Length: 126
Image (cartoon, rainbow, N blue to C red):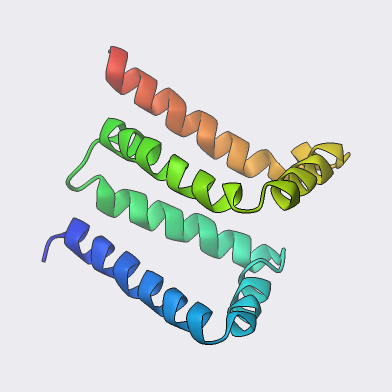
């Protein structure tokens, strides 16, 4: 199997597990969410390393431009999930925007996004 096929298989397995657990006992899935979104510094490191490893594997067969184009496909899928709960999503977004420590809490993801966007723009135009 190619790296892309392995990554696709991982997504399929994880999504299947999530779907089964969610259909059988949604409260059990909440335990997973609480553990992974605990705000713990070690989880941030795990997420960054995970993202970097996946990006490295993706780049064995794709360019950063391909990856960005694929993100445009994934974005509306995420939006569909949020659209199912408009009031809750809007309340959550308003709460985040009001946070006086917003940039302090999110600087790393902004830095990563800016670096990736600059890389994609460089690849497209130069």
